[in-house]
Image: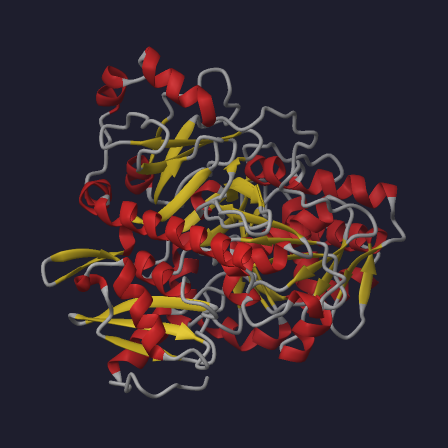
Amino acid sequence: MDSANLFGSGLRSIHRFLLALLGRYFLAASRQWSIRPVTDHSEISEKLPSPSSQLLISGHSFGPRVEVRFESIHSAFEFSARINPAQAAVVDHLGNSLSYGELDRLSLRLASYLRSQGVGHGSLVGLVVQRSIPQVVAILGVLRSGAAYIPLDGDAITDDTLMGIMDNADPSYILISKGCISRAGILSHPYGCLEDVLDMIDQSQDVYADVSNLRSRRSDTAYIIFTSGTTGKPKGVMVSHSNVVNLLSLAPGNLGIKPGVKVAQLMNVAFDMCAWETLGCLMNGGTLYLRGPHRCDWIKVMKTVDVLIATPSILVPHDPKDFPNIRVVATAGEPCPQSLADKWAMQTIFYNCCGPTEVCASTTMMSMPHTSFQITIVNTMHRHIPNTILSIGKPTPNNNVYILDDYLRPVPVGVVGIMWAGGDGVSKGYLGLDDLTSKRFLADPFRGGYCSNFNRAMYNTGDIGRWRDDGSIDHLGRVDDQVKIKGFRVELDGVGAAMLTCPDVTSACAVLVGDELFGFYAPPSVEIAPVRDVVCRMLPRYSVPSKFISLSSLPLTKNGKINKAELRAIAAQGTSTQTSQTR
């Protein structure tokens, strides 16, 4: 490495070290946000917005105001189908495909059939499915019927979780993939085999119900994503058409997708990033390529497409030089390592994003290109430039991000606070959980005349952040990712970030088992000693893992994030720190 690159690498390591320090010293205050829900709106109105608060907010918090062309997800799809009916809309791993015209006709007939089965405007339809072309038809068919869909992975979901979600959501109808039809026996709601239904309506000349004049409103629920339920029962987040069209029909969230652009569909259907892949492609006229179940199928799709949306953990094993076809990458769902962003940004437009599911995908985007999101997919995006310090970017169009103190007052540039999301990306709240919605979603006192969101709410993301001078945001971890070790509060994200500063470490994660802190990293070719040394230099002694375990790759959840539960299980087995494991 030449001296210039070494100097640059050193600066970035120092920057990450300072961020880790900020996150650590902020723990005591941030813990208050996690246990003190602010629900007294009079308290907010007494303190906000003062002239000084408005000045702080107006500087960085509001994304650009841009008019949204489409009223609903399917109206954007219908526009693409009218313009290019012969173009391929979706292609599976076996080479089967549907054109936009065929997908338009079949999804409209499915909408008609669903209406005949009692599905109406505002109804819910469960999709217990496997990745396939029928899955894509089902999503559009439900939307065009005026209903909202509940996407569930028929291969991965447990019986207890499936029954719990269906009891909670009480759908009017359920469509089940043929490969999962055995799951129907545990359900008490009306259902149909997806493939059989599509075969029937494709061959029939019957008009099941008139849907020609059916129109969805922006405020209507489009789909419901159920959280993993790791801290309790799964919670359903209601995402509106407004949330989705605001992100996916506008730049940068549309990722430059247009007719002729090929988009990968890699993510699990129950993960909101799948909505970005699928709906973002079909709303903008691209061609969606579905991966198959095997690793070779992933590689085949990645070698075919122009646009890739993934978690950082999915990208870690891959060298961008093996995929010269990929032009745009967006990452979200978990923190992106600086080295990973640098590597992919050398070859692609790389976006780093952030946004809780309650904020519909992404509220900030930084064309780094890297992405992370949660409620409306993402609300910030950052286009990354190689060898510059990574951030999560700025608010996306018609979205707002506020960094607030314990009394919901905006903090100055450089001061750490909790990130709240506002604007058109904020979802409708939790299905059937009005009390929780009222605690996490508050009336937005900052929006002024800028927010067109029908519920005028802001959401506590639980993320810790600070503003940079240029209006972008440093993400410093999460309030709920803090543990107590020997009386000291430790941020696990900060420990993982410290391990990632060690040369050649590609992924890292810290977990607590009992009162012992474990540090996992990949690959095993990196010795434990330098990893421990870099953590010791950057963090206080109580934050240094007592055991380090190297793996060939860190295990991932079905949504492509690091599987911390599996890491805790490995740690609980008492694996020797001197033995590299292969997984």
